[in-house]
Length: 112
Length: 115
Image (cartoon, rainbow over all chains, first blue to last red; front, side):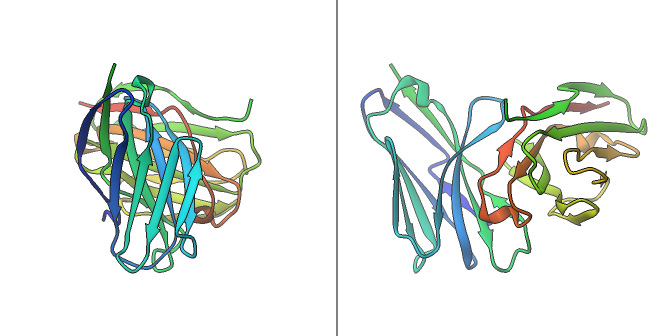
């Protein structure tokens, strides 16, 4: 079962614009992680935010977490063509044993 | 170089022919896991291991076996593959045994086709 659901499923923007992706989940979590996947390749970890954190930054990435709404957002500022990829959120939940549960992903295309 | 390796990267096989996909990590990670990725379904966890000789089922374990005899290796075994196991498979590892609390490092993937 998918714990996290990303929105939108696909996003197309111009280089230099900001990209915002959202993730909603269903049960209590310990942390939420964002990963990037270039077409058909392995996932790369971007950022982890714990349930007691509200916002986290890493370079051009900004992640927010609202546990009351069970949602998170990933903002990529000043996007580049190289940011074209699929982005996944993953949740580690208290009720899910030791499993990390991934959402369906957002496909981001950044046009040069 | 710290990495997770998988072999083979591509495999075409026939229904019922037993196969093993190997996974190895050189980071001394306690936690290892297998996922499958299918269009529209995202990544689903098959099995995971918190340490040597400790394995547990994920969301979709049916038709798969795993073993963790050594810390660095976590092979995925399909005893009798069927076409519905055609998928892209990823192995991942994480530093601590409780893998959900840390970032996971993914292998490059194995694209399996079962005819």
